[in-house]
Image (tube, rainbow, N blue to C red; front, side, top):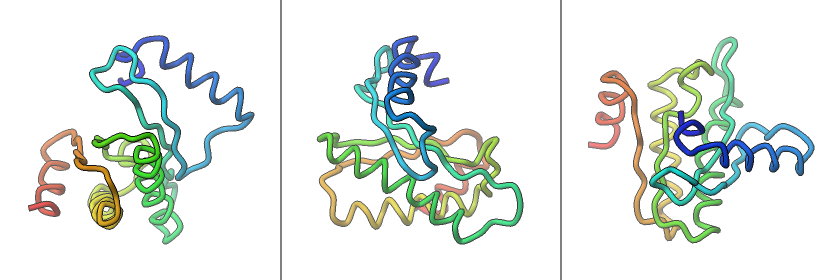
Length: 137
């Protein structure tokens, strides 16, 4: 959805990054591109863990790394605000409750020593909204 809204330039920039790096982006790392036709100046890209069996501590750490990597990259580039979707909870099948707990705790911990001023959790659907509200309020 973001790629469609941003325009072809975003797809082209992502393809150029992949060609230059010569391999797929590792899980838990992040890249920054321009936002093109989006109302945001930039887009943070991260690959979350894919859950094919029981959830492991490694899966949890990789998901936390997605959030830390994005926040670090945002901060390195002077960004003051970041919006996150529910990383890995869709087709990657990370359990929503656990993913939300990891995202909120990881972001809270990072923000203790950060210049980032605002983080927004963009959720889709009433279930995710309830989960995040229970963790944030």
